Structures are given as C-alpha cells and as structure tokens.
Image 1 (cartoon, rainbow, N blue to C red):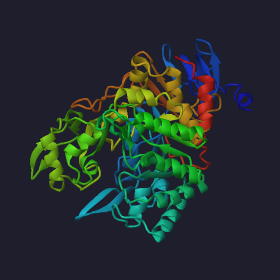
Image 2: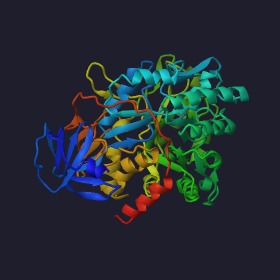
Image 3: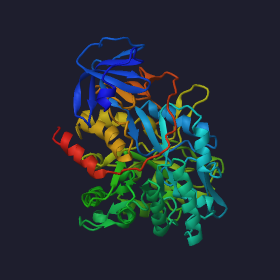
Image 4: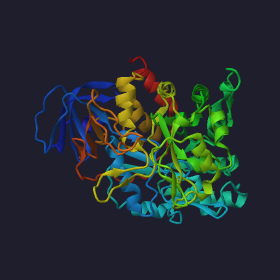
Length: 552
C-alpha cells in the first residue's frame, strides 16, 4: 500500500537529501541513496548517488554522512517552569541539537506540570505549577510550536501532591481511588502512561503503584520507573562473595508488570545499579523479557550522573562515611553542581570536588544550606559512579533504549545560548555514536541507530517514526560517523558545548538544525497518544536478532 501510494514523487519536492548513507534498521536498508520529502513525509527513496530527476525547493548534499531516523529520547525532564511555553520549548531547543526529534517527558514521577510536596519541618518540595491539570497544560501546549516533538507521562508524585499527601506518607484507599480517576482523565487527554519516582517519595506503596498501573494499561498506556532504591553488590564487604541488595528494587516493577500487563520501562539502569550490581540487574530484566513480559529499559551512556544531596542522604540522616562504605565509593567521585553556602559563606564552589569533611559538614547542616527552595534538586551533585564496563554491558541488550535524563535546561535570554544544570541534554546521542560506537566499539553503527530510533518507536507504537521509509514521517538526523562526538562536559566552561558532527536535524520535513546551528524553524508539536502502547519487547528482540545481531 505504502509503496504504491508513494511510488511517484510529487513535484516539486520540499527537500531532497542526496548522496548520504541511508540506514533504516527495520528494513535493513544501508546504502547510498536520495531521500525526497514533501509535506513532512518521506515520499521517495532513490538508491544510488546523485540528485534524482525532478525539482526540489531545497537540497542537502549528505556525502560522507549517515542519514538516520531521528533520535527518540525515552527518558527526560522538562524545565520545571510554571510557564507552559518555557517549560517545554526551552529543553526542546536544547535536545534537538543532539539529534533528538521526539522526546518523552514527565518521567521519575514528576509530570511536566510539577510537584508540591510537604517534606516536613516546614520544608516544601516544589517545582512548576502542580495545580494546573495536565489536560489543561496539554491544551495550552498544543498551540506552542517546538523544535521537536514532545509527549509526556503522568507522574505518580504529581498525583500524590494533588491529593496533599506528605513526603513519605502512604496513600489511603480513598486517595488511591482519586488518583486513579485523575490518571484516567490524563490518559484520555493523551498522556503516554504512568511514571513512577519511587526513590524520590518512598511513601508510595506498591499497592498504589499497581492500581495506577492497571489504570494505565486499561487506557492503553505504559509505565516507567525510577526504581525505589539503587542496587549494590556488597562483595567488597564480603571478601568477594556476590550479594546484590536490595533485590526488591528490580523485582517491584517486574512484579507490577507481570500482574497488570502494563508495558514497563525501567529507567536509567546503569545509574541505579551501583557497586558492581549491573550484571545481576541486566540478567534479572532479561529473564523477565524471556518470560514474555513487556519490560524494557534505558540508559544514559554517561560516566556521571546527577542527583540531589538532600535525597541521597535521606534528608541528611545517613552519614557520608556510611554511604561511601556501602556504595564502595571514594570522595573524588563527587563534585558540587552549584555553589553551596551556609549563612552566605560558600562551603563548596560549583564543580569543586567534595572532600569527606566538607560533604559530612553539609550533611549535618543540610537544612541550613542557602537555597531557593528546600528539597528535590535544590542541592544537585555530580557523581562519577558509572563504570564504562557497565555501560558496555547494558548496550548489548536489544531492549535497552537511550534517554538523556536531562534536568532543567533553560535558555540564556541575553545570548540565546543553551544553559543547563547537567550536560546530558547536549551529550547523550552524540556520545552514543562518537564514544561508544566509534571509540569504544561497544556496538555497531547500525545497532546504535536501532537503539536510538527504531527500537523505541516500535515499543512505543510510533508507527511513522524511527524509520527511513516511504510514507514515514520525515524526522531525520544527518551526521558524520567519523566526527560525531559529545563536547559538553562536567567541568567549568564545558557544560553547554554543542556536539560535533551533527550537521542537520530535520523535523516534520523542515530543517531545524543546519551546520550545527538552529535555523529558528519550529515544526515540532505535542503528540497526544491515541493508540495502545504495544510494549512489544519480543518483537524488538526478534528484529534485532534478524537484522543486527551478527554485526561487528
């Protein structure tokens, strides 16, 4: 049907990309070809070099470059601003420079509207405008042009905050029923499903999460989770004997998936698998996949993660030396993500390494630290905790997708330059192809494109995205496989550097990034889910094995 409908190229084409290496993992296409686009759709693919006959309003010579499906970012966050446009358009601007043409927000239990949680002792954890109903938020967002396409999940912490549930407080049956009704409304308005931030508010009960997951599945949605705890392998304390704890961290989402049938993404796996526990976590999830459960995962590909000192120390209650011992950490792995001051005196400067004494001093005085709010993300810290071998292991699994988990990007109003709390918004997909594919050989170019586009598109049910095929959406990234690399880093002066090697990003057939610069075009839009998320992990694995498993 699609081949007949798009066999003849309407004239003139809006855009023809020619002489590039066109790679489509679903069909196995990997050849020099020309891609003709009109009205936001790939109309015709002509194998061979040169520009095919026919007129075109614009052409791009992609010689020496890969023409890939646009990258799909399965786990990220909004700017947590109260203003709807600033909340989404700001990170949209940032992520597209890293080749992202579609991103799924509202992760870790926090809807794009935000949260407001009473943390006790007069402390309130707040971001955005949690009083705004998500359907109303989406109605406003639908009228706002973006640089790339955006969709969202509905966060369980936001639902809890709408109920007035305090931090660490369990839900009662009446509150659960009201949360279920709110979630049903949001799913009908186009939410992709439920997101769970179990670590950020451990008061959420497995019962409540299971009930909400049932609602998501009944309305065709999915679920994603930041697990309740990190896992640790205590072999460093047990003379080399493997002991992974707490196993509930991974068993909880798998059990919910098994009971409800909801497609489940276990988020940023290597971030949450500490002290040598990654191998056990990967095996546990893979066993669930082999069981036939619709479970998948995603990773970041960075050596660093960013978290909140307030949360990591459980509001200052756990001594730093104990954390160091259990996690087998050293103090040179931790850096301040901002200046920390007490009574106006700076204790640790931004990007400064945290000594044990300074970290313990902060922990004992966590409620005295000068900051705008009190709680989540008010005390950000850079943590170099992800061994490269863990990332390389995770990349071997077909059901592992890629998410940048970027936090709170914004735009410098005076210069127009991106400004962000962590560099991953500019350094996730470029790092995948530059560092992990080219430099480390962790996976092939085709396998990386599969992970970055086709696999999540299949799993999420984005039938026209993640593919370079006639009749599919013209969301495309053009990059040089020999030069693509991330440049944004975790030290002063590098955090906002754009990647190299991504020459063009096309969204809905329009050039949004040209020669590594934004063109000012904003064809991206809110995507409301109107279909049932397939969560077809078995199909993802089968396609990988059929097309890509034997590639070097």
